[in-house]
Amino acid sequence: MQRVVLEGIRLFAYHGVLEQERKVGAYFTIDVRLETDFTYAMETDELDGTISYADVYEVVKEEMAIPSKLLEHVGGRIVKALRNRFKINKVYLKIMKENPPMGADLAGAGIEIEE
Image (cartoon, rainbow, N blue to C red; front, side):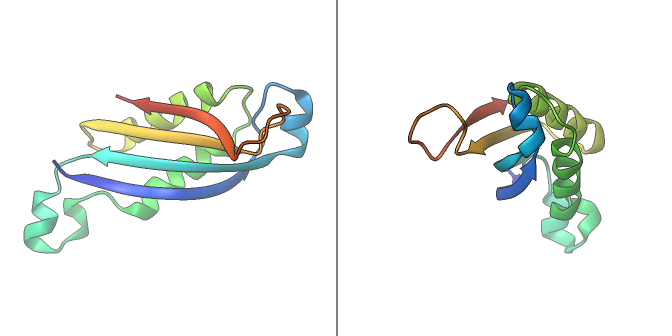
């Protein structure tokens, strides 16, 4: 099994059910794992045999920039965009909102998608 992994992407974005959340914004932490075949890159040392970390980051950044009420919606868009752009067998995505406004002492709350 081969995976391209980006862990701990930290972006400021405007997602949340409350209007105030979409106005003020918050920090989000995103982890992405893309199962793909990069055997060619292992053998040749050529970028065209794998998926560029920078390109994955740009897809995540672009989708995170579009405000949404639900992280489920944002996550669905990111997964769809990644599948449309890259040849991948499986996607794992985790999005965590740092310090969500819910009156609880926790580091974050969020979603995970694996498909």
